[in-house]
Amino acid sequence: MRLDYLTIFPDYLAPLGLSLPGRAATRGLVEMHVHDLRDWTHDRHRTVDDTPYGGGAGMVMRPEPWGEALDDLLGPSVGGGAATVVVPSPAGRPLTQALARELATRSRLLFACGRYEGIDQRVIDHARSRPDVEEVVEISLGDYVLNGGEVAALAVTEAVVRLLPGFMGNAASLEEESHEQGLLEYPVYTKPATWRDHEVPPVLLSGNHAAIAAWRHEQAVQRTAERRPDLLHPSHAAGQWQVVPAV
Ligand code: 6GU
Image (cartoon, rainbow, N blue to C red; front, side, top):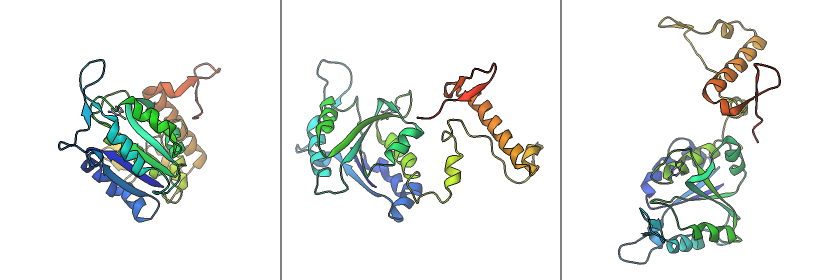
């Protein structure tokens, strides 16, 4: 998978070279390229923003540098096939495990990290019309406001790269995680069995695998009901909750 990042703060994406995405790159699973959007400006001040038409607070990113950057970074000369353009935005679709799984199937992702009040809408409309663009997805990390898309691009990258075939050693550990089953994960414990007067739940020491599986499922449902009731919906059986299948 090829990953491109367009930003006015390339240093903000330095963590891509570390840890999980860094290891994926070393192993040849991904190729990552960070680009400074200002490299596609032509004025002395390398301007990327201007005041909004219609008035209002803040500044909007001008379309021209984005257009020229897309011309250079997409298209047949770069290779990797048609790209999925990811635009981090608080107005986007919420990032979910299902969306991460979908993005993990794409051959190229290009992250368009905006700052200020956002990117001129015509950049997104234009990108959608390009034959070298498979899809443009606006993605939000949640219902709060960040200053720019860089942190979201890192989060999406980490969520996607760990799903690439050959990345995780143990596929079972992926399936058991929070959200893969549509539930939050059950609590986990390791040695010692007693620590500062806190005991590991005895069922986990019982060796009874069916009882352990049942306990974990019950814990996962209970946690989800308490913390994320939106992930559950009442079943027809009174007092019971059931999982909403992840799409
Ligand atoms: Cl993706 N971008 C910004 N600027 N703010 C956010 C966000 C993204 N997701 C949540 N808040």
